[in-house]
Amino acid sequence: MNGPADHLHARASAAASAPRGGWRAALSLAYERRGGRTVLARREHVGPLVVQRPLYPEGGEVCHTILVHPPAGIAGGDSLSVDLRLGEGAQVLVTTPGAGKWYRSAGRPGALAQRIEVGAGGVCEWLPQESIVYDGALGELSTEVRLQGDACFVGTEMLCFGRTASGECFRHGELAMRTRIARDGRPLWLERGVLAGGNALLDAAVGMRGCPVSGSFVVASPRCDAALLEAWRGIASEAGEGAATLLPGLLLARWLGPACEPGRAWFARLWAAARPVVAGRAAHTPRIWNT
Image (tube, helix red, strand yellow):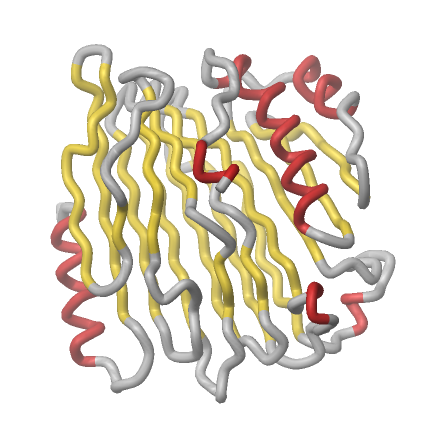
């Protein structure tokens, strides 16, 4: 069986043989539980995708990690890959220093592939800040999560279509999205979607309802239950529209709104309610979110 380094080297070779133009970047991280501490046991990268040093703002059990992409966004022709592997009992919180961006493309799509594996007893909190999809962007976003035993995954994704602060709308381009979450090889959640600029879905009642920002918050844990769902439903969003639903082993919240800030605030309150239940600890806001 090939290990993480083999996959990273294979992607590096593919990047080297790919047509010129666009960034090629791959990041592979492996975490282990050693005693009462989670450590970043291995990190490898190719291209401009790195992590800062591991942080422990809430003690040694949880390793906070900040993913850094110096180009600040994904342009046409870029190809980025992130692989996280958490050993049994490891607890990790991953975030980003600021909003990600999908830049306008001259014709080639950019791609971001995210792969996360969590061993039994592990907890992965995947909490990147929002991504802004520029008018004219062409993107492919895929996320695959593989859980073992009673592993827990907490993940958010927030997309802003168009640079709303400057009055830009998403009239051209396309973002294709795919998400797969499985436990012990059995799917818990499968989702595919394509949103094209100027499409009627942007204004339709069954689509974006004229809102430029869409967010998803998912918790995959055997501890997800009706009590946690009711707690979530009792937390109102200050702006926009939010709703939550419970599926077997998975709790999902969706949000639509006029800007990212109220969506982030709502997700933060949902996280504060869910974390003690599924991760056994109170929410500890990463300092980078306040800068």
